[in-house]
Length: 638
Ligand code: CUK
Ligand code: CUA
Ligand code: CA
Image (cartoon, rainbow, N blue to C red; front, side, top):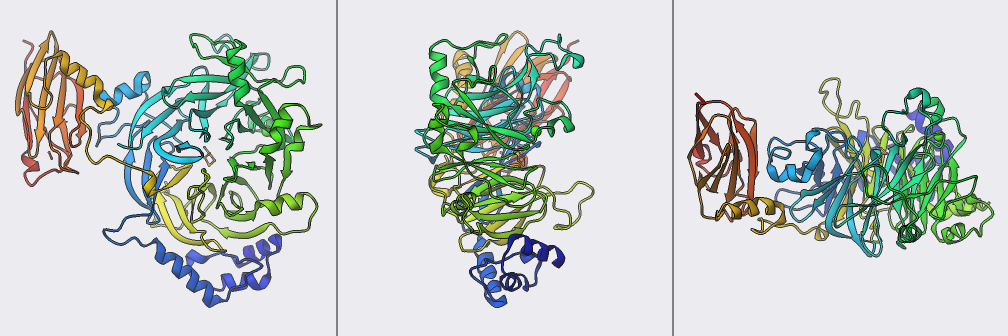
């Protein structure tokens, strides 16, 4: 281990004395901490500083965290809510997965949100982002991509439930996702990663790939309606994306400029690029009618490809070292930063030069690049503290490197300056990292979360499949201090942290909440008062069972249907007390759902087995929770 550190110190040019002072401390959590060249710390002062930081993480019983953290669940398909700095998991929000507890994917309300895609039981959520007004989190929505089934979802943060899911047409694998920051989140920008033939109707087979009309698209979803507003055809593919603080530009990394189908092909070019999108010009083109539509889709599609070496009006392609990955906007609004991945560098793009780039006033696309610091091996993602420093994950080195952006720009101009401030070992192989409030103007430089892909030896062994390790680092001082290891299940790719005052949640449901508007309308048609009636409505083989719940009993404890009926159970929870949620589980029918205070929820199933079937409340609600039961009698068909 110490060999590795020595090499690292030599590489970064950090002072040997500083390094010794930092790492002479024992204890696994401090391993690999290298101090600043400028402020040499003694062993004692470093230990005291770390102890101090670790104390901050302790959120005592009954105390509340300072920040909300929203974690993507990767191929678990969900979103998780954590408290920071305790790293305690507070809630899970099912989105692209099914949830046995809440009935997500089972209830009629959730299936309405899932729409046609309800047939899919899996998802792959990577990038959770909070809606913004004037470059600050407004706490209204959280948006997240689904790479697995090419979807974008919206979560209402007042109830922490997903309320809209949109499938993006004519593309495969929605990956990078970020939001328009200014003047407000009108658009959700999202990258379709994989290049496909158009039309993809089976006429192009593997042998005809090269000759086909193949491309992928950059997509904008209207944040309010959740309809796809427009798509832009690009050269190459699209990986990660971010938007600027003027509302004018968005940028995306491309690792497959080769449009290759295999690994060797995707690494053939020495350089790939960052694609920059001019949002007002895209809107102009659509207004002027300069767009096409594809297949059944009515979404306007603008061509952003180069033709005969000439740029389109709406895009520019900035060459970067090969196969870049993360794309991050600095919170001062000055730079897009592309992370090198296969190159040990990050590429700094000056946003204030983009007007000139689009007006063809620059000789070369690379004239917008104002820095390209060498950081270490495998830079994947960068985050910011609002004090001029950037923090980049180094996947191969298993480190986070802290560097100063303006100094990296000066170094690019030939000035001798060491822009690297510190390298900290993380455990192990980090993907994203994310600092508190970093995607907003209010980046406050307090906490840094590093989402490590491997945990190896950090936790009790649990078999061949390991937990990930989400590590918490205190960045409020001059040096980064690792303070917490957080095991997580597969697999957070990204997270976002907001101050707790920025998120305002409801404690009980509003009776007129749009989440169950369709169910309310159905009840109205049936002449049912949801808050009073306990009644069975029969319409041929369709049976609707309306009941209330009030701890510890259902408003209806017995109902009768015929074998083969399609039964819909609609329950309205009359409890008004915070936290008194009920459930409904029909035994042996695969039916389960949550009904929180003042909520109406419904679930539909086929009564295919004759006999008496118990149903029960599965959310512990009362001392007599076990007794909160009822029975369905299914009359045999013959
Ligand atoms: S990606 Cu997974 S570590 Cu989907 Cu943002 Cu980079
Ligand atoms: Cu109602 Cu448990
Ligand atoms: Ca490439």
